[in-house]
Image 1 (cartoon, rainbow, N blue to C red):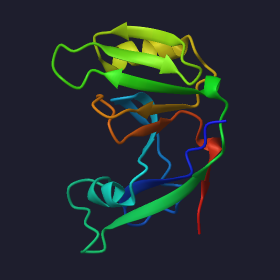
Image 2 (cartoon, rainbow, N blue to C red; image 1 turned 180 degrees about the vertical axis):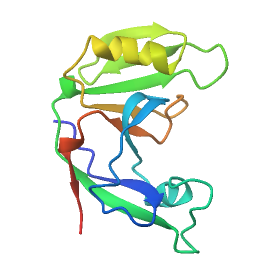
Image 3 (tube, one colour; image 1 turned 180 degrees about the horizontal axis):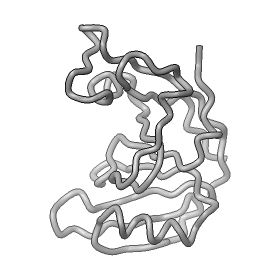
Image 4 (cartoon, one colour; image 1 turned 90 degrees about the horizontal axis):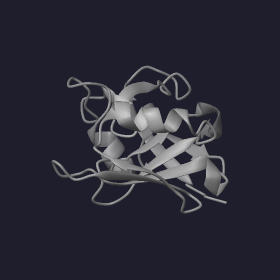
Length: 143
């Protein structure tokens, strides 16, 4: 099982933790709810340019992630530098795709793998520090 533990999402202050689970289209890791494993990073982005923790206009929500089977997870490597190919690999180590990074290309690959519930960015990849959850039901808000 792949256990991601606690993940964080920064948003504007106001939405409940459940309402903050808005899906984003066309991100670095394709469509999904974007989170991070770092509470500090979550506090530095999300909620737009006017959101600020110190001003009370940005909030960080925390979530537990249901353990996933390796075939429900994919990892992205590369694509961080201009012209560098990106690689998508399943949690089982199966190479799913390599090519020019674009949200459109990532989405095209993921359409052929509907069981993937989370895409995880690896160090030195286009998705560094990011997790895209394609199945929000695997997230449970923490008190």
